[in-house]
View 1 (tube, rainbow, N blue to C red):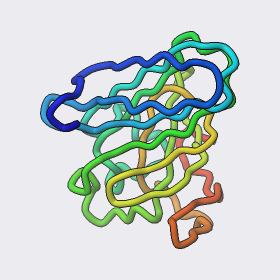
View 2 (view 1 turned 90 degrees about the vertical axis):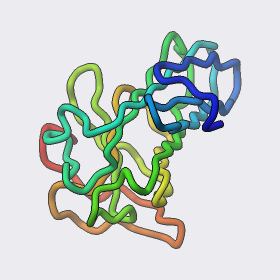
View 3 (view 1 turned 180 degrees about the vertical axis):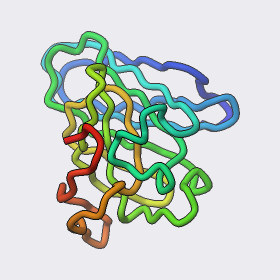
View 4 (view 1 turned 180 degrees about the horizontal axis):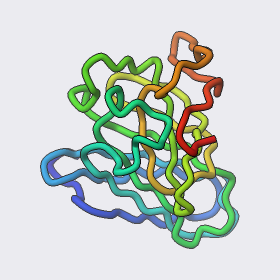
Length: 173
């Protein structure tokens, strides 16, 4: 809960099968939990999560508009889980962390890998206080916001579910 969380890194071990864990992370003043579902785990291991307030140091190359994003990013990495079928990740943030003028139905999620490459992550539901990545194998830093270039509008249902239809600028794919 908001009264008990870690300002730093939290690691959970995942047993076999599909498992969901809530990582009670935040920063010095804010609780921003992350829910990670590891799908089809065939070899146990850990996932660790942390969050950092402010823009990512390389947001200008991410394909996300640095003036229309969530002013926070998250790090999610596998620590020895050699066999799993991707992750569903639910990132939480406060509406006040969204830049003025940014519209969450337009958001995408970008991942900055340890190879220093930006990639677009398959997105699920976006709200004014959460964003969902679905079926992702990506690990590293996750940034959320509007694309930095005009693109084909995403397919949006009443739940704000996206299909990937935008290739942002920067070195992302």
